[in-house]
Length: 167
Image 1 (cartoon, rainbow, N blue to C red):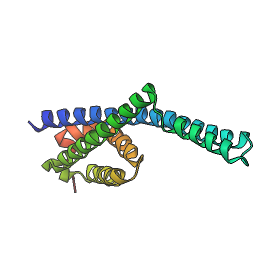
Image 2: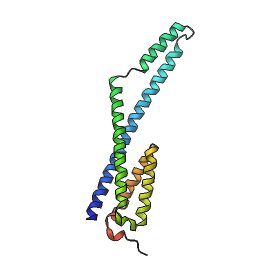
Image 3: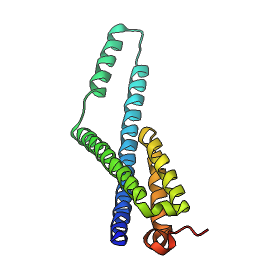
Image 4: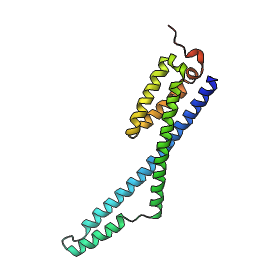
């Protein structure tokens, strides 16, 4: 009973971790695109403000109005990109909470208490997960550690005879 439940839990943890990493990758690309757009708008504003004779208040006011209109005007692709980014942020938090719940469930299974290696690794992953909830990109470290745990300790996690601590 436990072996099938553990395998199912480990497979879902692995799939959830891969989903988290892929969402963060897409989010990173979209944030880079937004950064490039913000840099372009800032440099446009700086060059527009400095290219004309700024001693004339009328020219200065016209330039400022043109730049303000350009800065606060969203085009269709920018608006869609913003909606996608907000959706990815919400999905990332939902998957991250599910990831934390799966880790807790994995740690609370009673026969893992007998293996100090698994306990130490799960405690490290949980610590990074809690820190990653508040600090960006630390959650990726927790996800990579969880993938490494599932990949390298698959046999130790699923075979009951290897979970006992022999004294």
